[in-house]
View (cartoon, rainbow, N blue to C red):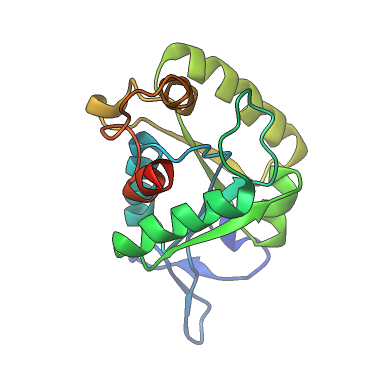
Length: 186
């Protein structure tokens, strides 16, 4: 019996999200959360959104309500609006965008989410993300963290680099999503 079926008295069918409980098949939606500040949403972030959306029935992009990062560019509502615009333009109908204003594990539990998606570009990212994943596992052992790498041509892009380039008037058109670029030019 798979962990996600504990307490449900069902067995897994050959198809990944169908379960059988001796009377009928039950569809169990596979949902993941991709949390972050996304200030701003980079093409690297969006690459992971598209790829994670292909792996799950539903992906929730959880946008941190507050950004403690130096030189924050956009408030939460603006960041969410830009992400929604890019998601809609990309035709990702299984992606929703929500505010993250609590502990990530509490956010996941409230939505019955068992998987957290985290992006890792370089070793230093992994060190930080690994520590956070272990902390989340300690608080919520039922929630797994899945590390994904962006496409190699986007691995150098970071939101902090984008903020720095923008601060000095540089061109970030090859680093950010169309919605972000439109806000920067507007």
